[in-house]
Image 1 (cartoon, rainbow, N blue to C red):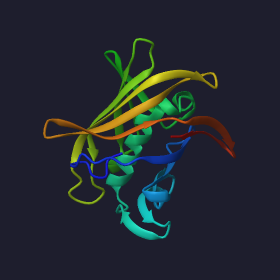
Image 2 (image 1 turned 90 degrees about the horizontal axis):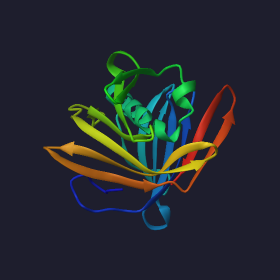
Image 3 (image 1 turned 135 degrees about the vertical axis):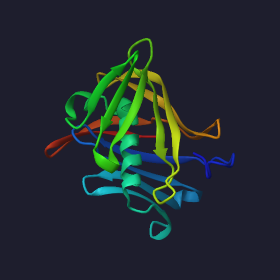
Image 4 (image 1 turned 60 degrees about the horizontal axis):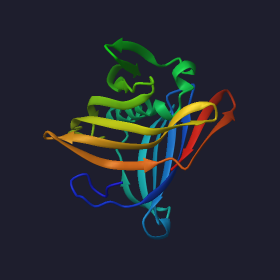
Length: 203
């Protein structure tokens, strides 16, 4: 992933993510830098959203302001990553669906935190791309609503499901697409939690 969107400087990382299949929730934890000294937690849960970066696990480097814009942006991420939690397509009652041509619009939330993402499908009916025209780039004003997209490929049959094992994410800024995250999946498994199911991926 990029150190900064505007700069062509990349750093390697490792991460695990848990995605709920019955609620719009996820928890992404990553490590980067020498010996993994930099840690990040990007999450959406029933008590709100968070995006925090720490050095040595305890020294705060960055912390997104808790806001409706942060929740909305994280909800868009959840919707865009349904390719990695296909069971949620059927099991999550919070999702609303409608077809637009050959694409699908999936939405969730209400009021200031309502979010919608457009999913494009490949020739096999699998999610190939996700797009939102106005995902907030900042949790605090100005929120900078910006076109945002993700791409998925390298689909493999795993755990009786078709899953993409590679993806990238980009912002469209001033007419220029700027890819800022690329990753591959190292492992994917299902966990049963009390009153919920979740998909766990590592990459």
